[in-house]
Image (tube, rainbow, N blue to C red; front, side):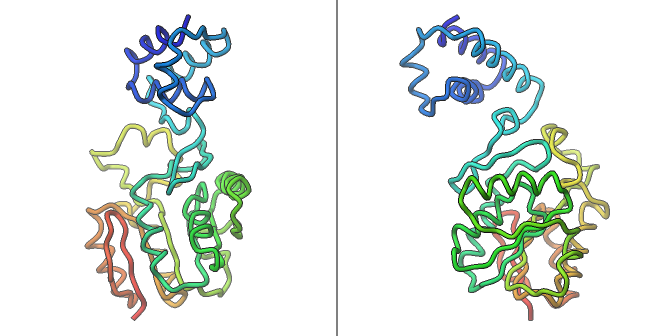
Length: 258
């Protein structure tokens, strides 16, 4: 089977762009124009089998990022697997916010793939960046990304700040579990991602509130990602611990210590 006919068949099963991404991955090409220019190229048996296998996975709902093993974040490709959340464009606002802050010590709590910590280390090369996560498997992915992208981050295992000692930071950033499992608008693709990194009690805010409490005397700035429907509650709760809300960008809330 040639590229043109195989691609046409795949596009009848899954989204056209997803199909093209899969073909480019298997064919080890980057430019989508390659597919149109090489429609007559005959696929090897291995290529054809791999394309069918990846297309089937996508048809079953598995996120494309897990199928190809990476996701772009802030202009860089990060390795991902089912041990970590897939980086979202919404989280890039965290980078934009922190880049404007005067800070030397940053910690990313719940680092997952390391996309926030690594990006901050690369975008703010004079800052000392730490990344912590409760999951050893997630930290392994983060370490791989750090090496591949040439960043310098101190990654280690910790349940929020429990394993950090008494160290203080200029900025704490945290994209923690905040999804309420009962939300009717949850995407079905979330079923493929690690529940440990997604779901929390107290209408999704149990872990976020614990983070706020722990951060009370540990930072100048606190940057949190939560759903927009939770913003008012999070701002009120943070105010109890003397955090003043100073900026909102999409899902992201920036607080400063009064």
